[in-house]
Image (cartoon, rainbow, N blue to C red; front, side):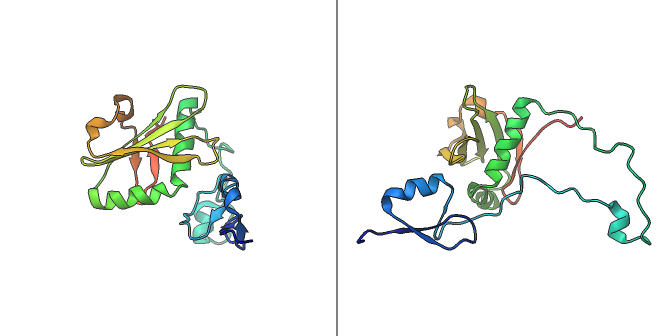
Length: 184
């Protein structure tokens, strides 16, 4: 009584709950959503596969489509480094920072982007988004309670350390980062 409570929702669409100031860190670590915080849509982890192909789309007389030659597409396996880059991009794309860089890109144009795994046991990656007059660096820690955080920013791209200037990704109009991974 007498404390200023902070209101959180345990998940999107849930009723707001009062949280005491001492427990705010625990609520944030648990992924609760603070009242008034911006939320962005996230990409589902498992994507549903459409069935039926064009015949179903155009309803061509209810004929059954012929079975595929191979039941699943044959894809090359991604290396551990490529898997880490894809996971980091997905985490970034699900964060609020996606909207930030999309807004800046609307003003400054297309940026250069890199996704670089850091050496070490923690599996962290750095996403760098750079324009001629501005740059932002985000640290992605997949196992952290806050998987994406702003690590640095500046106005001169010469300040960016050389390993982070291996421009190996793209930024789409909506702010999504996509690593450039060679297709076979």
